[in-house]
Length: 102
Image (cartoon, rainbow, N blue to C red; front, side, top):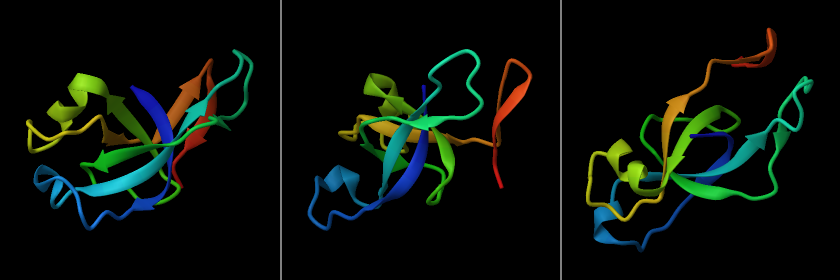
């Protein structure tokens, strides 16, 4: 699983028929660069993920990729490579809160 921040939405009016009805999000993985880190840092790349939960911009989410991503959608035979499967409330590392949802 990947921790990522929702940066926006992707709209594709023409797409594979199996993708109809899926909301697409632009997400950026968040990284922790050391054991003593006090906050997340944004990763260098972004990816598009199917939103299975109704996540919104600036929320931190859990994303799965690869073959397990299809299991996170209602349509198991969809051509999906990344799916939002959780909206994060808190991230705690070494008794320090790195993230708490507003």
